[in-house]
Length: 439
Figure 1 (cartoon, one colour):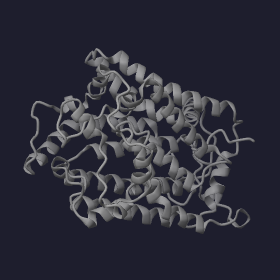
Figure 2 (tube, helix red, strand yellow):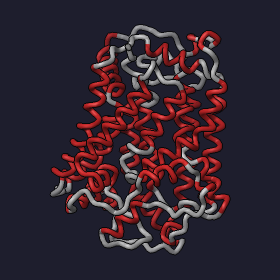
Figure 3 (cartoon, helix red, strand yellow):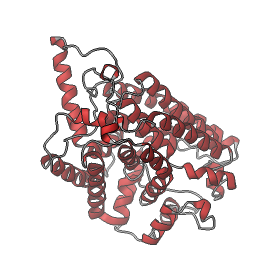
């Protein structure tokens, strides 16, 4: 069987409508570099997502401040990359690249005439549910300190749309890559998603979800070719410079709501993720804290809480915090890699990343380019089990929950799917045609 060598196009910007023209001679070198970067991103998407936060922030901070455990952090990253690179290299070597994969991608999405309307509805519902839940107390720092699970039944109902932020992002990107949504409008809708999360950060006095969403949007958008890498680097520098002001504003909000703030922790200390990760080096692993088992994965991952309201919350971060001498109302994690090492050791770090790299390869390559459903599942993989800041193994349960929450949307897309012979050919004159774009 021949698989296409890639299913995403992280080349140049997309969304233009002008006819394709030969590049000037001076642009050929930069075009060749973009093509090379695009091939690397397409062949090793999981590896790139895993490596990016460590290469851009965590390891440079560890080197600058001379973290004595920098060798341990490098070894953790190496174990993770051993699993992902091995699987993605096997996938690359066993599949002959298909030069017509872009056309196949368009054709796969042309069979879903409701794709763009569904993407808009999912995005609006996601924003509404998340903002409503935050107003009702779900996820606020006050509830976290007090140990309350949510702000009431209506807040619990809002969790039925958990994960729709990543789902809406995936469907918007799919609409753009299929030619239904211009780049300008795509950026506008992404601004709505991020702006809503920023507003929620003010309501909840928690910045971590906003940072996680920004990294997810940036990394996944780069893989899908909707962002230029140099633009992302510029935005990262701006956010880095703005972080001290954001940190102080967040602390002021917490103090206004009666939550004690440790004034000894500065904005720079909060960026020392290498210190947070290196704590795990002092433990004999693996450690058993009574983390979720198979039955817990099924109960918490497949059954919505609104149908099982009496089950106790699962917070591995709180268990870790108590294990290292903290209280039950606060949580601590060693980042995703550190948590996997803590619970499963080196073998676990390799195996977990190899498994999700294999899942991602199947979603992107199995039987041709992915349609919107497989692309959405791929985005959920990056949003939950592979997001560097998430808590393992809770993030795996979150992935199952988000897949279940997305099932009504997948069913709707499936019902609207037209047979291949009845799919209207896309209007090639309105499709992206700039270098690196789908064509």
